[in-house]
Image (cartoon, rainbow, N blue to C red; front, side, top):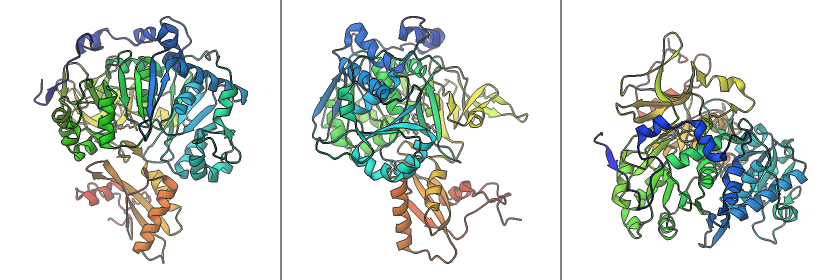
Length: 587
Ligand code: WT7
């Protein structure tokens, strides 16, 4: 073992890890077995909602708590598997009554609420496609996603609707229904919307789960690339096979354990591991409706007796910043596994886990496109601090290079940097980029899926993250497309051109910085800078908008006119400028 390895917390008496012996698990694991473990047969039907909810009720666990929602005041709302089954059936019936056909896309723009569970799983039960939208998005990213996703039903609150959707509604020709989750009973319904609760009340509690198959599209998650519009990643009902298997193999979830995933349901982690995977393991999920707050988080971990906690590096760094005394104000005897995902988890954070909690954070790696965890530090044994871990059983992961002949070749020598690649064939692999088959095909080369991340793999098979192969920005775990931010900036009347990069940030990992070229005759002053910032925040939402804007007289362009973000980043960070042979104005 390497010098970086740190012992995980031992399993409590009576509990055995799902994956105790890595080598043995890799040898014996097959996806065929993983599928059989779910449906308990070779039925060609497979439905995520059935596996997550109905199955637990069927095997007599209906009275177990599926989720506990905690609001600002600390008030808890508990939901059993049976209650969840009934509300999902009702929503599935509502979709039918509204004439929404199978396969049509249903989206949520909601906080972490019980209604989100109902809508997501009810839509899946009815054979519809579920698409979560991030509630911190502004109108511009929402418009793009609602349009690209062909969303027919949107479930949201009156506040979100008025602030973000009403103004773009006329552009959304395919949006047939907006259902409002009332935040208080006396609240007026905006024009052109329907009361969600009332529809639900009128619907029957019985619904025969749609006979979906492994290859039917179930989930639509938007992700960002370097160029062009966001990409709609589709996952099929078969994703539940991998999401369940990894909830056991990596998160080591056992029935009736208390599990807390802090990810927002607007992103893939919040659905795969904040909803589907854990419910298939019959755990009780903690859902905090509030935003991050160190004291509150420690209190939840302690008071709710959280056993397994899945969080993200930005949150861990914020906890570190808040100080270990706060951590130590509580005790966490029930907490037996802490895991992290979404951005690089530095070794210091892993080691801080040991100081503060007596156990390390377990880093895991995956992407929207992979639909489930692909690389992980496992619960049993050791964590290698600073490494993302090893390939999950059933996953063939490698570091590859492109050959001169245009092919792909796995790198055998340890520690050489290349791109992370995965052999297609795992059940949660994305089934497409919506309406963009060329882009989908371009993700595969020579029998590999290329992830767009650079890494190295050591002698023991541990992957070490190096960076992205593209210009995409990761800020607080959110993938941000420079193109989308640039497009919003360019909608401001004073802006001629914009270029957006990620700059290092000690807490968020990266922060969004924009360089703006003004139209000729417009004077760059502080008032204008603030106006453009305000414009971007309003359109994009605070989570996506640039934190900094700098005026530039001439953005570096290639001779073909493309802005060289790479060069801007190098200049910003004082790095070598690299190959400038294509730079406009160079000899
Ligand atoms: C990108 C995928 C992971 C699911 C939620 C985000 C980065 C992910 C790690 C990690 C370093 C990581 C990669 C990846 N990333 N996990 N453990 N260490 N980087 O999914 O929004 O599609 O983002 O997040 O760059 O490609 P996503």
